[in-house]
Image (cartoon, rainbow, N blue to C red; front, top):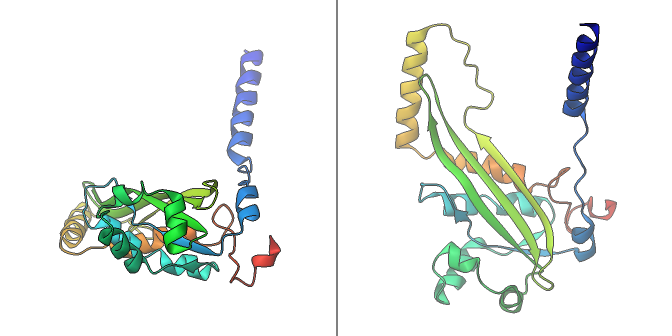
Length: 217
């Protein structure tokens, strides 16, 4: 019995140490060597059922990238250029040769975003809008992957759902469901996701050449 308890305690300790272990640091070698100054953002691929997702997300990515210190090509102009050249959909745009993107736009790197989730998630007593996306930054000159990451955000973050009244919870949940159907909370949540995904931070993008922190890496 004592041997069993000892093994059980050892197993619990190993699980605790594993949970507390420091996440592996991201390898920025390729990004540091490439040092991209300009980024071309392609309209995101949309794997969600909401048709608004791609261009809603696209409109939120310029700010965090610019604040991180990169030049970002105007996303509306990029989208229009693709469409005028016979590539009207994000899926087709993502298939464009990298050397062509460099030749036409002169971009150092291209950012490919995929939206995994965009929209309301309904539960019995509550509902929330969730936006989840992943991204890849690729050197248009060499085709090398410079960075990749993923992030998500929810409209229910920071809310206190501790009410003990079943009736209040049901009514609040119904109101939120109606509000989510009428309006597009996804856009504001997409902005949160974009900042978490693309802002200069540990695990995210490194500061760009226009950032005062650029020389630190």
